[in-house]
Amino acid sequence: MTTLAAIVFWLCALAIVYAQVGYPFVLRALVSGRRGREAMGGPKAPRALGTGTAPGEPPLVSLIVPAYDEEEVIAAKVENALHLNWPRERLQIIVADDGSTDATPERARAAGADLVLELPPGGKVAALNEAVADADGEFLAFSDANAEWAPDALGRLLAPFADPRVGYVCGQVHFLDPDGDNLEGAYWRYEMAIRAMESELAGITAGNGAIYAVRRSAYEDLSPSGSHDLSFPFRLAKRGLRSLYAPDARAEEKMVPTIEGEFARKRRMMVGLWDIVVGEGMLDPRGYPPPFAFELFSHRLLRYATPFLHLLVFLANLALLGSGWFYYLTLLAQLALLGVAALSARLPDDAIVRVCRYYVLTQASIVLGLWDRWRHGSGGRWEKAAGTR
Image 1 (cartoon, helix red, strand yellow):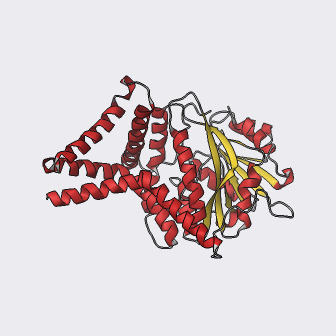
Image 2 (image 1 turned 90 degrees about the vertical axis):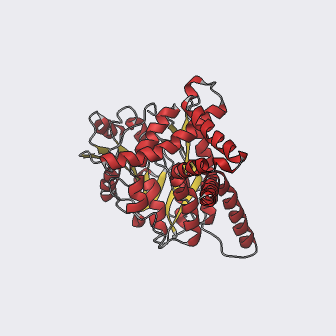
């Protein structure tokens, strides 16, 4: 029994450390090896092929903005789209209104949107599916209503599509809120560094809603509980298409100001996660190129399994308490992490306390998202995070 507990403890603990810390180092080594083989004349991986469009007439692009009660920001979003460095006659601006109860549709039209769809409430993904059905563009670009794109962002976002093997590209989002206590901005910088390396190896495993684009021929309608950010990269990989990160395609978006607000946002996001992992086939390895399967396992599946791995480590640790002083220290470390997170409001507001609280709440959001999915179903309706408008 003790031997089994030790095996469980060490395997799960190492998996947690690898998923949270070790994967970027392994990824860097693999990317360096690929670069070395390319320098010696080996096959090159698809990468961003410049910072503008290919010579000739720019393609027709449909920029789709899903919206629900966005009267505060929708006019500014349409105006931002109109000021992109892209020929106006080659840009179709679509606002997909998901049953707003305010003046979102009227303000979108007044601001100059080419098409405003007033749809019955069905959720963000359902609205996106409807907008794509009415889009004319060869490429489909997508943006949150509160995201502001840099003037050259669209050209830089579309540049990697010069390679026909590329089906999806996401840009870089910079979160604005220097006065809040949310650490999502710091985590996002870490995440973007990983995505840059994944782009060089086998393609990114997730995108973001603020700035991304899809080749029209690659687009797939998803269920209301689906997510473009998580679903497109793995579904397109099974079709032989790559998903890339274009760091020079930049957007800005307000971040949830508090860690508690970020926890609530992540919990809502995690409700549909289980349908994507199991129902949509993320967990099914068939069709993945081996390097992408490695990335998906390391960066997605192990991350989503982390709270359950923590539980196994804790239970195994309890079973090992009579096996030496080391296991008393590891149990104390786990209890300290939980204690600091639970009592963070009463402790000095320093970096260690913030990191402990952020980490524990992030892991809890995965478990509670599963709980919400089991109790209430997959849903599909969306809610704006407080403080992001």
